[in-house]
Every structure is written in structure tokens, then in C-alpha cells.
Amino acid sequence: MFSYNELIAIESVARLGSFSHAADELHKVPSAISYTIKSVEERLNVTLFTRLHRKVELTAAGSYFVEQTRKLLKEMEDIRFNTQRVANGWQQSVSVALDNVVRENGVNQLVRDFYATFPDIELQLTMEVFNGVWDALMTGRADIGIGATATIPIGGDFSYRPMGELAWEFVVGLNHPLAMYDGEIPHHELIKYPVICLEDTSQILPKRSTWQLDNQRRLIVPNWHSAEQCFIDGLGVGVMPSHRAKRLLATEQVISKKIENHIEASPCCLAWNNKNQSVAIQWLLDYLGDTEKLNSEWLKET
Image 1: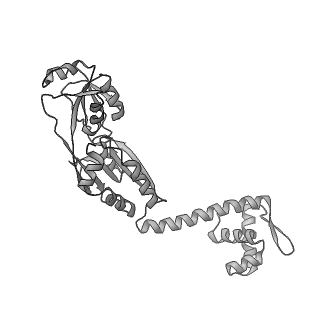
Image 2: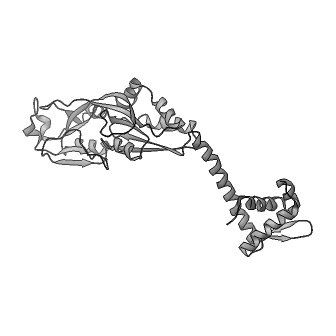
Image 3: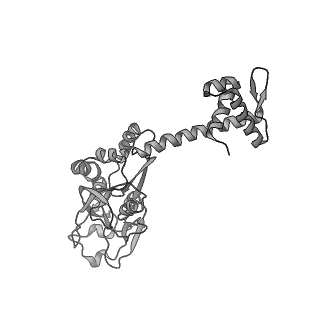
């Protein structure tokens, strides 16, 4: 409806209060500026400026129009600037999916350091469970996944960096019937009780669980904090990451038990989609570091 040059002319006249001064600023003749203003007024069917002897003043409608004009010009400049930045590898936001098993101690520091480096890029963090991390990468919900299983369950142009192994601990609450069980607990005893587990957040990929016996009832919880409360209250049995179990064991809120089949440690990795490359993503990959740093900061017991 209005061209960029028309908006520039109107803003200049409003700011300088004169057709001739606006013409000097825009390197045009006053008659061209006057014609531009009149053309816009005719299309709007309103008067934007009151013409006085040596100056012009905005009408009420003109004041509103100029206010909106300045917003539009700012948005147009932002579009131009950000388009150029995108061409040079900039993006408006970066999304990171964290598997619910990882330690959360380093999240706040990561956020602080990221925003100190990229004050104009949004960092989006989501918590996923099991195949939910790969699902987020596959569907574009995440650019980077922390704590993904080391086995890539999908095809695609993905890269990954090993994070080491996540150890698991089988625990029960102090008041649970199995708390007093001596020795290795067989399956026929374990299956009597619901297994406390988190629901896989995958939307497309097959869902899975960390540990569950065939035909065993589940008590599904949204996160590990809720799972811990269920373990403490003796509502079921199951496994939790060793770094989370350590505190509960030390404060004698749960008991560690041996079961018939030993629970193997889970290899984890840092994963990312090679199609989504930017300066911010590369910074995050460098910041998160090598396998040793990833393991000590996100998986290792403290």
C-alpha cells in the first residue's frame, strides 16, 4: 500500500517539520516531497500535515500514521539486517534437547554463558526421555541433543560425540516389602510390584523403557523428581541413574538391591543434525567439550 521511499519521506517531513528540509536530507527537490505526501494523503483520504507558511505540522491522524511508520521502518530494517546475518550463518534461536537422565547442574551456567556470547539469539531447552531426544532431532524440534542413546535409531545426516556410560542403580524404598529381602531378588518376586518409570517422549519413533520385566505393571511418572518421591514412598520398584540415586542412598531414603539380571550401563552421546549449522550451534558444540568433559559434567556421579 505504501512504498519504503514514501514512508521515509513522511518520517523525514514529520521529524524536520518542513518539506524543503526533508528534501535536502533525502537529496530531492521540495516539489517531489510535496507530491509524495499528497499522494499518500489521497490514498488514505486524510490530511497528515497542516501546511503553514514556512513549516508543516502533523494532524492527529498524521501523528498516528508517523508513529506506525517508524515501527514499520524499524521492522523493515530488522528484516534486512537479520536476512544478511542468516546468510552468514546466524539464526534466531537454538534448541537443545536434554535427556531426563543427565545431571542438571550445568544447565544454568550454560544458559548464562550462551546469552553472554549471543545476546540476540534465543536458547530453547526441552527435557526428553529415551528416544524422545532422537525424535526431537529428527523432527527439527531440537538442533542438539545431550544424553541421547549412542545407538542412532533413525537414518539421517547426524553426528555424535560419545559421552561415556550412564550407570543405573536398582532401588526400593525403606518401607517397601522388598527392602528386607536378602540376596539377589529373582524376577518372580520383582514382577509382583509396579515398575516406576518415565514415559518415552518420542512422538514418531518407537518408544522404549530403561528396565521392565515382561507383563509387569508400570507406574508412569513425568520426571525423575516425581520418580524419586515414588521410590521413597515405596510405591514401586525400578532403576534410576546412579548420580541421582547416590544422594537418596546417602540420606538413607532408599536402599540399593541386587536383582537377577545385572543392569548394564547405558552408552550416551551428544548428537546434532549436520543440516542445522550456525555459529551459535558450533559454539555450543565447542562449549560442551570432549567426551571426558561431557561425562564429568552431565553423567558422572558427584
